[in-house]
Image (cartoon, rainbow, N blue to C red; front, side):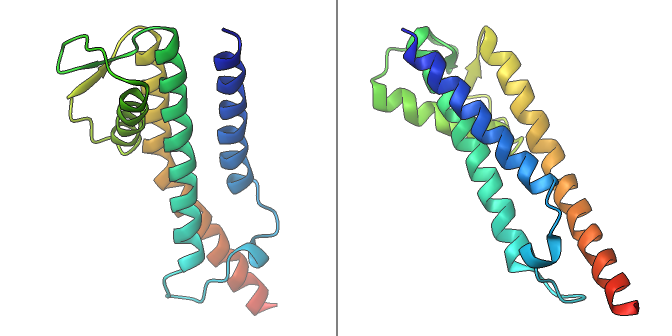
Length: 147
């Protein structure tokens, strides 16, 4: 089964590009319009889109790996679930891990642990990246008004 691995590579590339594009945006003033001291709906929407992209991407990674073998264990038991059930569990686990909630009802095993750690790290670092982006935008706009 080579198809799941091809899908896995495509998902990783798309997720990585999404994060890279957000961090490396050079034309920030056109991407985000933020008035001083006001909430920016554009930055909020960008943050939600990045989170959803990463959550679904990692969910698909867990799902694809579950086609090759069991990666997630529910309530400490190995259960046989349908394809749809596996997809739902994978996306749910991805969301819980990305948002660093970690209920413990679904546990990764094998390579899934390493993948879950990388997803939790991204979920932990992303808010700092968004705050840094907001500060950069604010400092660029204040410099452009001063000139």
